[in-house]
Length: 121
Length: 108
Image (cartoon, rainbow over all chains, first blue to last red; front, side, top):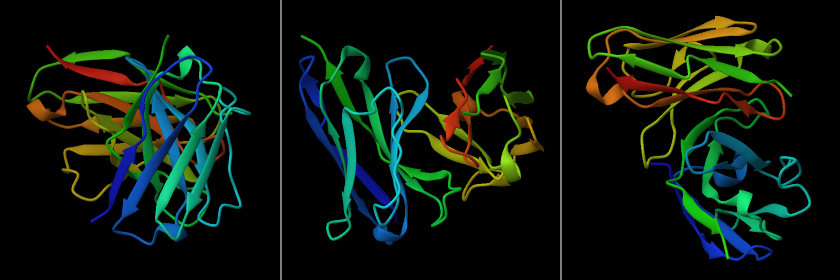
């Protein structure tokens, strides 16, 4: 059974940093791209950043470029999101999502339960 | 970037009725790489449809997807109480993978 468990969310002041983690199990983690998708309160879904299985290919939404860094440790089956220079508009539930295939044209077949990040003074 | 526009924003129907949700893309979605997700309050999104028309594992056959190019549709043939939720379309044929803004399906 595929399981994705996010952690690391919480309350942080503007300009602060947080590191999110997503512990994966039930599949060959290193073979699949993983992504972070966020959802601001009452809003829709935003694809924040993906990372290929080998960590060779990534992308960042313009809204987080230069401030967020995605990484993974395939030996620990864990995906990370380092978030720096946080802004109020980064307040959201952050979901970890598994890509459906080993190719680049993947959809998200499994999602974690999400972790809430609140940026406020 | 492909922009996806979903309509209507809110759809009010009764259990047993048929629901038709639309997703229109600003440019052609390659190879019909279009997915639909269902999200209930306080829950993560759940994959319903991929490849525009293929049901994900465990999804009841009252859910069906259709379309190609720039116009896609999610149809729920007979609404069950548990189907009232927000539905998102997503294209995954080109980067960035984009989502529609969602359609809220509410009980009339």
